[in-house]
Image (cartoon, rainbow, N blue to C red; front, side):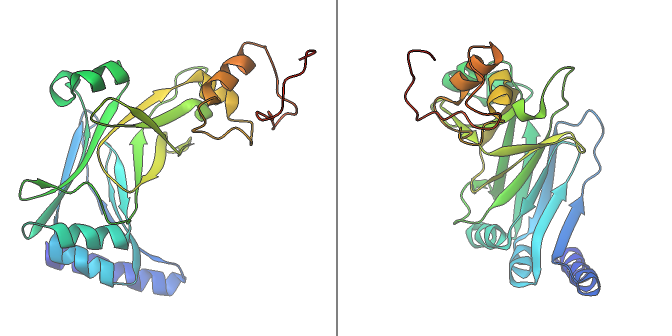
Amino acid sequence: TQDTLDKAIEAAENAAGKAGTDAAVEIVVNTSAKATEVKVDLPAEGLESFADSEAQSLTISSGVGSVTISPEAAASMADQAQSDTVTVTISEVTQPEKALNERQLAAVGDAPVYELCVTSNGKYISQFDGGLITVSLPYTLKAGEDPNGVVVYYVDDLGNLQRVRAMYDVKTQSIIFTTNHFSFYMVRYESNAAAAARFTDVPFDAYYQSAVGWAVSHGVTGGVTETTFAPSNPCTRAQ
């Protein structure tokens, strides 16, 4: 409710004032181990109050996933609201054949897919006017997997996959990324990404990143140093 959120904002501001830190509001949703979806209704006026407060973040935490909303994103949601309520949903897609189109299905294969959405009175709010939201999605490493190999892709309506800068948190066993829009996101493990991650001059979203990882993991090359690959250098006959 509006009153509950206002009290949470006030408590966060008071706690931050005593600790000398930025105020952070958190809503914890208790879910079962088998839960695949969480929905949280937020009052539009409460989002405006948060955006106008000294608090720097509003986090919704659950076992399904977590989102941390910036003041700018909250203000955008409130401005686009079609009713008194804005609903934030984090959902693991358990029936992809019903949620995704044919191109998306072909692109994601059997990798886990999550739908992140904000709605108000049936209207989807997918863009936040430049405001950012940090997302945390669960992923448990399998035996032998390198944390650097866990990657996230935005899946568009045409089935195109766009790599998103992300970081795996070993402590929370989750992959974390920041976005300015909500949609479908795919999480999967790529051994080539893990192999290429050590090179500081190979961007995570470079078209050749996977090829570099393949070459390194198959012993074709080891780069020019332990941390550089020099992808723009010409290849000599000896190489």
